[in-house]
Image (cartoon, rainbow, N blue to C red; front, side, top):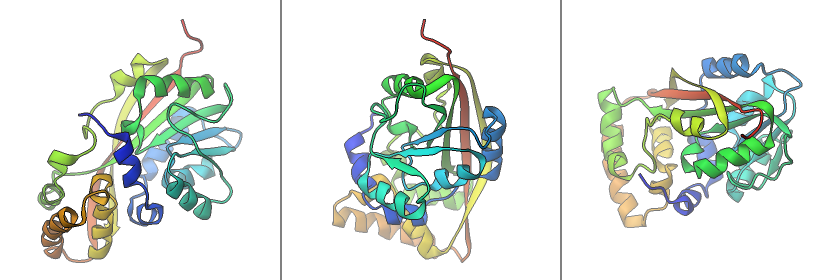
Length: 251
């Protein structure tokens, strides 16, 4: 499925809404990254496409120096306000404002599907120390529950999703200068009120950029689903994480 990166950027223009409505990541996934990369207080990391810093804040206790790079000004502003002890820079997947071999691990949370993968992997490799790590992570709604599937249909997710949900990126990562690619999954959940769930839906990139009339019609369908639920609402997710290692040198 083709992606419009400009549309994605427009959809991330409300950093405060995104930060207050999106889920965090399961503790098991953090433990997985700590073990896979040997994270410790001397580890230098980059959170690329850091958004408002939801993942950044979770990984902070396990590492040393943390740099966040994010193209959206609204997202950067929200990140700086919530996480003042992190260096926040403007940049992108193909233009990382860091020197060669300057970090030990690069993380990408809920963003790699927006990247120009071949170019981004080369740029990530450039800033990684030899043999450095790459960690990717996504939360996706678990549509095996009937009401979650109904919610997705009301959101028109089946026709408007901005990327191929559930796609396996193993081959994509391995086609770049990376080896030892591993893919793992975890169960996760977000506890929400009905109002919180509506905010979560509203933060979806393609919904936030719709014309008012179109968005109102869609949200009306969403409200029909949500009104049948009772607080608190447990929204289940499947969290997928990848780990990989940068090849020591290009051949």
